[in-house]
Length: 153
Image (tube, one colour):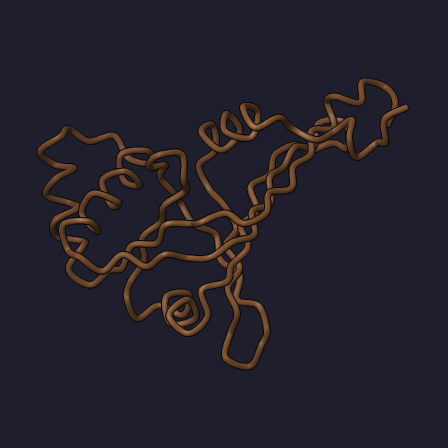
């Protein structure tokens, strides 16, 4: 008989669909003193990887420049039998070239704001000036989908 853990694990396709359907993730980086720094972030998807953008002087950017390790959490559900989530442990690849930051910003902004292509381009061009892009390079993914348990939870 499969373990409960095996029963609730998402397939790779289910993980990808869950990430695609989401809007906000929790991002944990490591502060200088070793404590976690946890923030909610909107994200985009580029070539199957999660991408975010943030101010270059933000605490998360400072932390990732010093130590690229991170953990992300995406979750949904309000009752136990509906809980779903994906936890990604990995490393940040920092993007500092202005034209690449613009492209990442368009991915994030385009998922979270309704704007025409011209406005999106202008917003990304303007916003990229003081920002850094981050590509999340997964090293370990843990997932759960309690709807797979039916009544066996």
